[in-house]
Structure formats: structure tokens, C-alpha cells
Length: 354
Length: 238
Image (cartoon, rainbow over all chains, first blue to last red; front, side, top):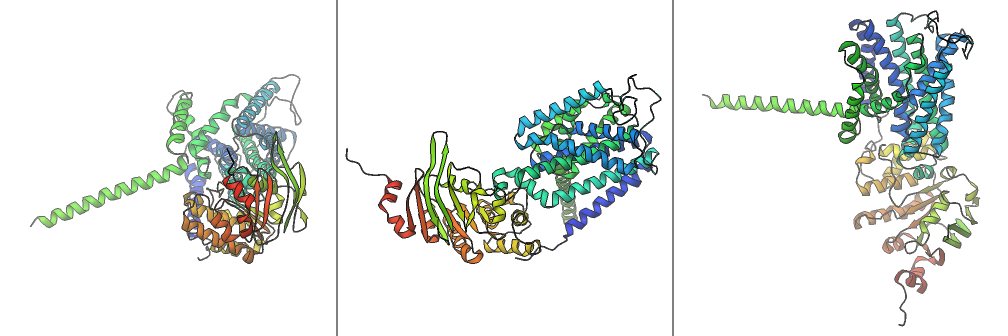
């Protein structure tokens, strides 16, 4: 049996495809898309990262967390407050928001050491609900100064300055590119984890906790590690969201978003990092298409997501990211066979004819 | 060498292991007994899944019960499960490599060690193949490769050949016999297949209803009156 070559051809092809798509996102989309689509594409990138966090927890470790949008909200809130309270450079703001959200996410993950399945889902959903309530009561972001930003006079005014963007990326297109690059880095961090020692330990935990223990996996450490990673990337994405919308409002973040995020992540495919991008498109791109482009009430989407989820769970458990390439390959084969048989028929007919 | 002294495990009202003292001297040792005799419970105590009510287990002089469960793998404890537990989503290579990662072995030798373990068990599939797509016998061999990689000292095999056809059981037996010599590890084999046990094990211990009823050279133990009675029952005058 020969040893596996260190860098396989598949890896190189994959890297080229990824770089090509990244180039398309960075230079192609700004050329063809209008201003409103650029804003939507920025949101797609941000929500892809939130779906990525869900995918790491559920797809890789088997822990179902319905609190991911709440963590996105927290990242957004921390980013907003830190932007108002400090003069940190934007990359440091991202790191700080990611770091603090990571700490909170690990706390949220503590019950996961004891609970799983429905119980963990309920606990994390309640965390999402609690976050929504705290932020509405707190009148997020409220116009005050300092980190808490609570002013006695209350209401948000039109004079509230928007959360600053990085000085090199103030315009919408430049900020879109900035967001895509940051999100690509976050995906890369996730990929390195999944393909490395943590990914293998997570797969082992997902398969069977006793077997993972017997294999020497410190289950407590690796479960919390997964929550830390998922929360960090989600926190950074939340900070990007703060700078994108400028003045975030509590009403933007609803508890039910956590559920639609879980649904779209499952539709996209939780075993694949591509699935997270598909989920981002479903979560942000399609509602925009419905509402702004076609004038359809986006609430219909809940029905469509429900039907899509049902279809995926029944027929394509790997999600669209898994199913779409297979379907395309099948379609390609069918088309090839069709053409090939036509060519053969024609050749046979020509032979018969004198 | 594993020395077990007065090991007792109690679950509410049940005593699956009752004051068991036994020594597994080295090589390949059998552990047999009827269903419910306490064999798997004994493995679970060694793995740290079950805390004994009393007793001690020393492996090569180290107090195993004092070690945190996940650290025992690093010490050199390996096991397979009655229902095979290879990781479906990972490749054969990664399945074995993840054990190596959590062992005391050096990273520099990982590739060679992992490929060596896969070759050792005679698994004739690509190391890149996903375990989810393998057959039952192949998955059992993946699990065995996981059990021998990365400096094992004690390898616990819980019915490794359960449900396999005879040819695959024979192959499994031949591989198990080579483990002590190849890796210097002590093997404890639990199985109901007496052919496999007699082929592999120099010594054998027998449990029945949580008590040790015999231990010693395999051939003697299998002829022991108490053992035959435990397996076949006794003829009683009516």
C-alpha cells in the first residue's frame, strides 16, 4: 500500500475553484450588481458566517444550538458599543467583538456538556429569546455614551452617528469587499479546524462519546472549543453587520431568525462549508429578491423554507451543497448519453442510406 | 501486566462485578463468561465509564483508576467496542490518525505509524476511503488498527469478531495473535467464540454472575468443571 501523497490533485483543484469564486465575489459582483444588491451581498457574506457557526456545532460535533443569531446580535451590539466608546482601529474592533462573543458563547455552551438534542436546542433558543428581550428593554443601541451607551433621555435620535467603517472601506462597494475578505478568512480558520486535529476529535464525538473518550479525546475541551470557534466567527460577523447597517436596532434581530438560520443551514448542508454560503444566500439574498425585486411578502419565505427543509431532510440529508453537484453531474451524464445516442443513431442511419 | 484486586461494581441492586481479583500476565489473555457475566462492565471500568465501588487496578505498576478517563488513551489503553465504533465521516487514515494524535507518539512518525497499523491489520482498502462506505469486516479491521496505533500498552477487544464470517474471524484471530509481539502490548480478548479464544489466548479468566470462577492456561480453564457448568448449566435430579 503506497503512502498518500501530501498534496493531492483534488486539493489543488478545490483551491483553484475557491480562489476563482473569491475573485468573482471581489471583482465580478461589484461590476454587475447595483447598490442595493451590494448591500444584500454584504449581508449574505455576514449571515454565511453565522450559518458556518451553526454548521460547526451541529454538523461537526452534533450539538444543536439555536442561539446563533443571538450571538450575531451580541457581536453586533459589542461592535457598536466599542465603536462608540473607543477609537480602536476597525480590525481590532472585529477581534474584540469576536473575543467577547467567544467568551459569552462558551458560557452558553456549558449546558452542552450535560445536555444534547432537544434539551440543548431549547436552552439555546431560550438564550436567543432572552437576548432579544434584554436588547429591546435596553433600547439597543440607545444614544448614550460609553460602553453601555444608555442615556436617561432614552430614545434613539436621527443624530446618532453610524458605526464607523474601516477608513479604507467607507463606501458600500469597498466595505462589501472588506467584508468578503474578512469572511473568507473566517471560513479559512474554520476549514483549518475542521481538517485538522479538532475536526477529527469533533467527528469522533459526533459518532460516539464513549468511543471518543476511549480514543483519548477530552470531550469537555473539544465541545467548548467548538462553541468558542463558532461564537468567535459569529461575533466578528456581528461587528461587520454593525458597520454595515450603521445604526443597528433591536427590532432587526428577532428570536425566530435563529430558527430560520437553522433551517437554511440545514437546506444548504451542515456537513459542508459551502452549505453555509448557500444558507447565507437563502437567509439574506432570497428575502431581498422577494421583497424588493418582486414585491412578494417575505413571510411567504417561511413556508418555502419549511417545504425546502422537508425536502432536504427526506431526500438530501447532505443539503444542497452536497446534492447540487451530484444532480449537476447526473444531468451532465444524461445530456451526454442523449447526445451520444443521437450521434450513434445518425451514424447508423447514414450507414443504411446508400 | 494488569493486576485487578477486589474489584466491585454496584448499580442499584445489581452487582455486575463482585470482588474480582485477577492478574492478566501479558501476551493475549482471554476473558470469557456467559452473557451478563460482567465482561463489558470490566472493560468499562478500565475505560473509566464506570466507577467501581471498591477495588484497584494497576497496569504495569500505574494506578489506572486514578487517571482521568480521557488520559488513559495517552497512557496506552486502547479498546474496541461490541458494536463497532469507527468514525463514518472520516477516512480510514484519519480514523487511525486521530488515535495517534491523542497518544504519546511523536507527530513526526504519524504518517508511517498510521499506514503501518493499517497494513498490520491487513486492511486492503485505500487509506483515503471513507469508513462509512466500508463493509462490516473492514470496519472491524479499522477499529483494530485504531486499537494498535500509537504505543498501545493494553488493548481491550470486546467481541472483535462478532457477526463476522469464519474466514474473516480467522484473519482477525491471526492479527490479534501478532499484537503482543509487534507492539509489546497486553491484549485482553472478550469473545464467545471459543475457537478464537483458544487460538489466540495463552491464559484465560472466566467470569460468571460477576464473580471470577476460573483463571489460568486457556486449555485447563476450558476443561474446568465450573466453567463447563457456567456455560452449559448443571444436570439436576428431579
